[in-house]
Amino acid sequence: MNIHEYQAKALLKSYGLPVSDGRVVLKADEAKTAAGEIDGPLWVVKAQIHAGGRGKGHFKEPEAGEKGGVRLARSVAEADLFARQMLGRTLVTLQTGAAGKQVNRIYIEEGTDISRELYLALLIDRKSSRISIVCSTEGGMSIEDVAHDTPDKILTITVDPATGLQDFHGRRVAFALGLTGHQIKQCVQIVKNLYRLFVEKDADMIEINPMVVTKEGSLRLLDAKMGFDGNALFRHPDIVDLRDETEEDPKEHVASKFDLNYIALDGDIGCMVNGAGLAMATMDIIKLYGAAPANFLDVGGGATKEKVTEAFKIITSDPQVKGILVNIFGGIMRCDIIAEGVIAAVKEVGLKVPLVVRLEGTNVDLGKKIINDSGLNVIAADNLSDAAQKIVKAVKG
Image (cartoon, rainbow, N blue to C red; front, side, top):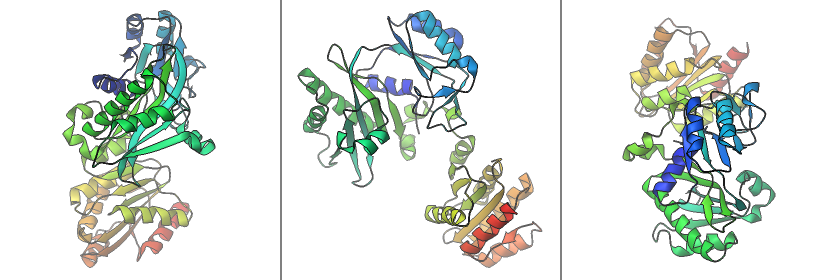
């Protein structure tokens, strides 16, 4: 689960971390008051969406002006104007894709006199199964570009869970970033507080880009992106309260309510599979035969008829879907349950696209009989390769 920058800044502040003074704006007529509560002479007006590259992005609507989603205002009136231009408009960045995201929230914060821009992040390193600290002197840039062009400018430090974070970790970061004097002590404390936030809130990523050295010589966290482990949210109702459902794919949101593992993709063949590995293999073989999956959907090993029905509804609600492939290997999951769920869903929402079903495993004969006796126009498949070829052929005519 991701949160907005202004929400991340509030969390950072609650952990004693240095952030700029700012106000969130939800309605256009709130912008002038919000900007007036912040000392000038410079205000930063930021569009709040769950995507990076806002400053280099552009708005689809000409009314939003030519500037990107992060703008510098030199008066309260200008900050008010920028907020009004951006609210309700569609911001397109490299991470949103061509569709863009609608801006429903604006964050106005005080400007900062910057001397240097640095990069600092904490994340889960899956290779070492540890929390890693990543830092670079190349702040304000995409870390992917830095990794590609100058990988030697990125330092990664893993933290042994047996000892936890120690002061030397913070000092290593400070020295790598070229900090001196009291900045080193401040950096050690920043790393310590970020690590505590990361662990206590079950985060899976905290990215500060940039962390800046001000002209006065102090460190400040100027931007923040945070993500949290969805499997641990039951422990953090305060984090769940920060969820912005408008930033999520509606189909993914519905899927989460039924404990379905669903991710929307940009292909045209809907997939319903049990087991993450089999789901990945199904998507791969669809690509192999010249088409693209519209989604990843793992109904799990203990799915009920109701869950299967909801999964089918989610797939058919996607206007991109031109065909559906149901691929079930019945180990824990019984094939007859899948068959009953598919039939119930088709009868409820209708079937306007080709449907290929491949069943194998527990109660496979009963599952096939249920489908064959249903009277539905379903294409049966004998194995995964056969199923993929049939659905691709059906979609491409």
